[in-house]
Amino acid sequence: MQQAVDSSLVGQVTCIQSVDLWSADHSAIVAEAGTIYTGQQLMGLARGNRRLPIVWVRGRTPMPNNIAFNLNSAATDELGRTGITGEIDNHLAERWGPIVALSLIDDVGAYLSATGQDSSNSTNTNISFGNTTSGGQDLATEIFKESANIPSTLTRNQGANIYIYLARDVDFSKVYSLEYKE
Image (cartoon, rainbow, N blue to C red; front, top):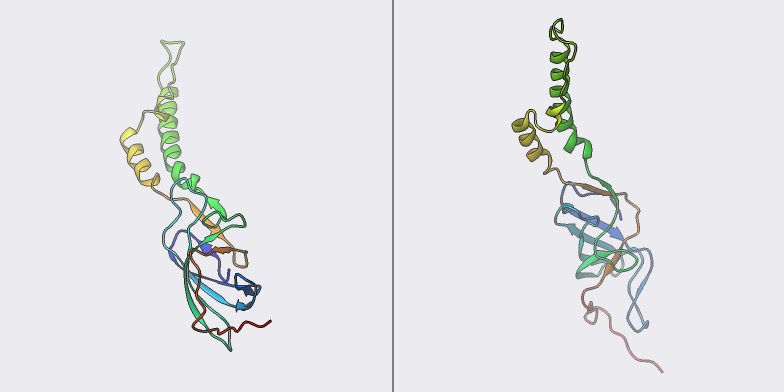
């Protein structure tokens, strides 16, 4: 891949073919090493997924041939599984941090309030940390609704190998004329 991929934004991606691509019968090179492929990342990382879908739309062979051809085929891994893998950031601190902080603030407030009580007539002070689960419930619920929608992010560095699974034959008959030789 020519550039790094970050699933937080959709956009175009490109890659450069590293080896010659031969026809199905191995009679001719149909796309030389150096062919540039352009693709699209049309969506971010779906919740629970660990693979990012990319569709390779077009290829263009290097000069002097400079042949453009349509692909509309998926990016895959070495085993043909659709999508690319990479480092996943689930943003756990961003999702849970505000809720934990709010709960701790409520609990510390309750603790300080309880320890500040006049205990001259009582030998027992009851301290409850119930706010972690129930205190500030409305605010915690609102914060959770907002932070739960933070999608995970997949990143993959430039230079990584990717594969293209051709969804259909690419017809080069209009640009290459081959003759059968015995």
